[in-house]
Image 1 (cartoon, protein in one colour):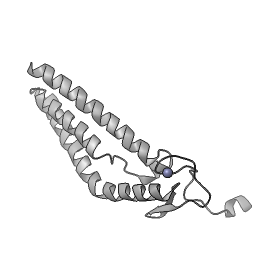
Image 2 (cartoon, protein in one colour; image 1 turned 135 degrees about the vertical axis):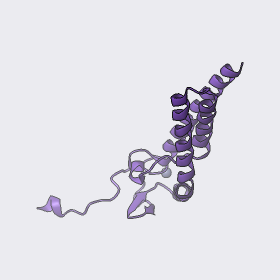
Image 3 (spheres, protein in one colour; image 1 turned 60 degrees about the vertical axis):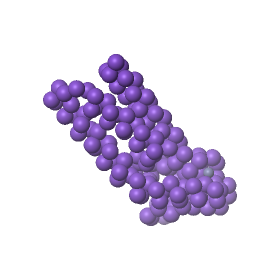
Image 4 (tube, protein in one colour; image 1 turned 180 degrees about the horizontal axis):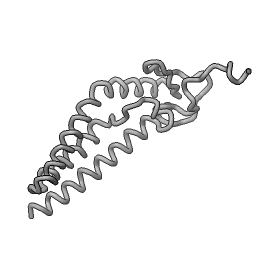
Length: 142
Ligand SMILES: [Zn+2]
């Protein structure tokens, strides 16, 4: 059957993987492992490559910070210790999200959410966490 014989296209998205704009004809690509991600311009190709290279190095530190925060928050809850440690860790995680916006474990996610939007959403969440943590902390210390 012809439908089965058709080659599987790796990238199903017809938007730039970095900025989310429509793709031109014959778009440039960024290769990640076995997958070619299509981008709309050379600028997006460079920015996307830079993001992916940093992601490789900085994802682990981000995950470790989140893990450490989770441990502190669980210990705080279990031991009924002062919430200050948990508040501080919440602020730390918020800052980590702002500085290290690399939360995506699987690059195929970028086929539905462009890189730039992932960075924006991650930073907004980080900012909310940090501000909320600071407000609670200041309230607790006053
Ligand atoms: Zn683009």
